[in-house]
Length: 132
Image (cartoon, helix red, strand yellow):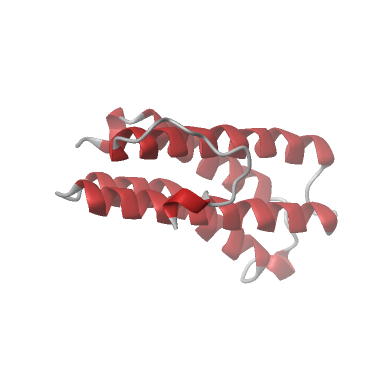
């Protein structure tokens, strides 16, 4: 499957670029700490979609989508933490938080579609119990 044709990859790629822009203004003392951690989590979302799309089985793709959601949750928490530490302006955080919610819903919808189940989308970023 060509990952570049997947809408969720496009959204995830945009999210990763947005995180990189936001973290450009983080203090130099955070380059190897929070900045690096947030960037790795954000970049993990599209890269797991890419890796999953390249696999031969649907089961493997679903696993990589699960990992992408985990990375999105991690990035969400780290961005909230950065807000609490006054490293991100509130309006920038609100904007990226909206993007996270939209991306999460899109990934879960794609996951459910690929799995062949009813398209239920969780209202939070946490993993639905039906997927455990």
